[in-house]
Length: 186
Image (cartoon, rainbow, N blue to C red; front, side, top):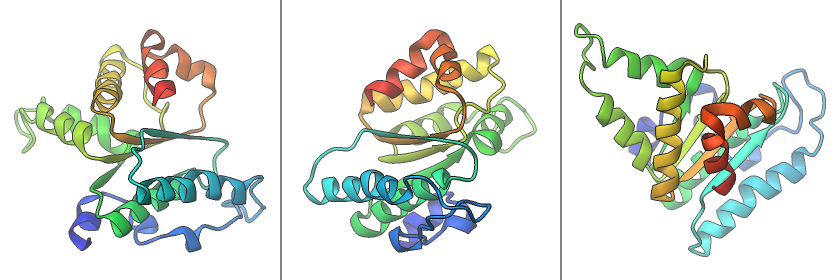
């Protein structure tokens, strides 16, 4: 379990956080509307499904900044790693994914030529939290890389937790609607 946590890339702020650690107040200290219901529906129900051996495919957490989406996604990942030894990764689109992929095209990078390895790892890991979905610049290359990740996880039927504060209209338009379609089916 310690190895799973060490390899998960969960930010230090959220490492070893579990259901009891979920605050029902946002970053500004104000109560989060529906926090208890969200906690119950998203995390508790998914953990119960795992206990019964049912497959999980996806969760989309949407709302304004400061409502605990990232923390809740990390809590579910932590619970799955701790209770079921399920391997998982946390992926911050704004900081990690695209920069890591770009570095694979730089001959001076130690990641040069490793694009496929990165995509393969993120596509096949049993649980992936994709944080800040929609912050990408939406270049054709970024949309292709994002679609490849989502589509492959969809095909492998891997649990994918997505957090976003972008309007659904923007998400529906990404990559000709194909990314939204995959997320919706998961």
